[in-house]
Image (tube, rainbow, N blue to C red):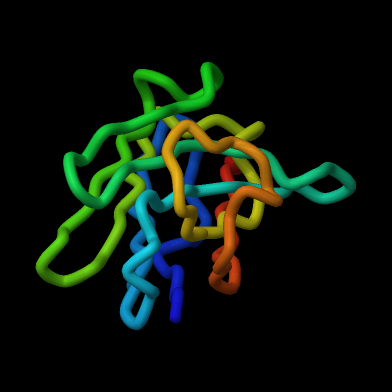
Length: 121
C-alpha cells in the first residue's frame, strides 16, 4: 500500500526528492508522515502532511530545509530535501496516520518499506 522511492547518494548541500505512493489506504487515513532511522538509532519523526488541507508539521532539525507535500489526485506524498547534511543519512519511511500532529511511531498504522538516503562527500 505504501511505496517509498527516490533515495540515493548525495553530497552535503545537495538535494533529493522522496516520493511515497499511497494507493489503497483506508478512508481513515488523515495524515502521512515521513520518518527516518539511522544505524543504531531509533526511528524518528521527520515531517507530516494532512490529506484534506495539506497542513504540515516538521521536526526542528529539518525545518526550513525539507518540504513535505501531497498530491491528492495521485495519492502521492513527497519530501523535498534541500541543503542535506551528513546527519540526514538514514533509511526514510513513509507512514499513514488517522490523526494530525502525531510524531510517535505507534501513532502510525501503515508503513512502507524504506528508501536509503546517504549524504557523503
